[in-house]
Image (tube, rainbow, N blue to C red):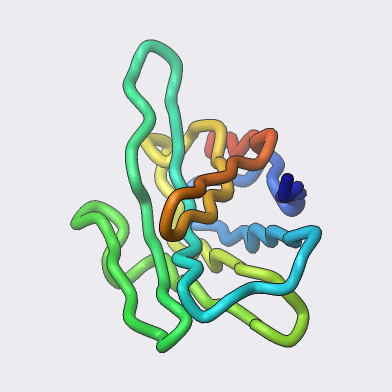
Length: 115
């Protein structure tokens, strides 16, 4: 079993920035894909961004140019730098790690964008 522990959520004004971090309890393997999902009240969980061990990234259209995902395989972490935050970014953000035959989730961290 792998534990994913998120940190960095909070309350920020529109236009502000937050950095989310996720630490895995085991070494990150080359087949691991790591990502961030979010779920707003009354909505389905959606993929925000993900990154492979080789550095290939995916972003949903609504966050392109504002969010940056990165991973540190030596530290077993993945981060999400969120800039120019909007009220519609408000959600619980979940760290995700998946590979052949396995998938793990963090407990989630709340991000609230409000004036």
